[in-house]
Figure 1 (cartoon, helix red, strand yellow):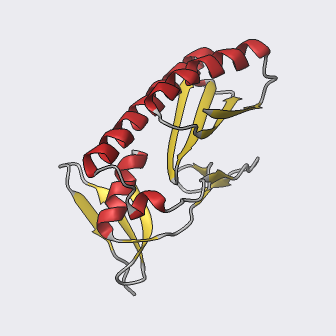
Figure 2: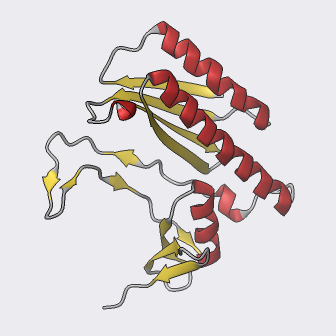
Amino acid sequence: MELTITARGFDMTDSVDVYARKRLAKLDRRLRYSVPARLVVRHENARRPDERFIAEITADLKGTLLRAEERGETLHIAIDKVTDVLDRQIRRYTTKRTRRGSGLSELEEQVLAQLADVDDPEPEVLEDGALVREKRHKMTRLSVQEAAAQMDLLGHGFYLFTNIESGEANVVYKRHDGDYGLIIPEE
């Protein structure tokens, strides 16, 4: 794993760097090739002490992005949690890929833009809370079935995409009963 580690809100010590690299190196056994990954660790002043340290990792598996974010009381706990989540995602990704066959599907060959956080020191205040995070997402042209598969790989509850049939922005989402729903805009 080609790991890049970035610290925000505190100074990174060598012991934390060594621990993170050692812990994430265990994921290499699930992969057949070297994967570029980016780990961002940060410290926030949270009310709950078990949510003060945040570890966020993004790994690019030949065009499919896997992303996980976890919080913990210490940096080591947050790194352990995010490693476990990424391990489950890699296991799910490789299982789905082997079931389909050895070749890569068209969906796996498409590259998604990395979701970028926009740091805004003063969040916009809304009626029921504050807008604390903004993400940018590259719209890819997919069928509904491909969008649902990408949503499952990312582990999200919804996925925004451009419908290949209509050319319009659509949202596919996971319903509570396990089925899927599709939101189609109308004027």
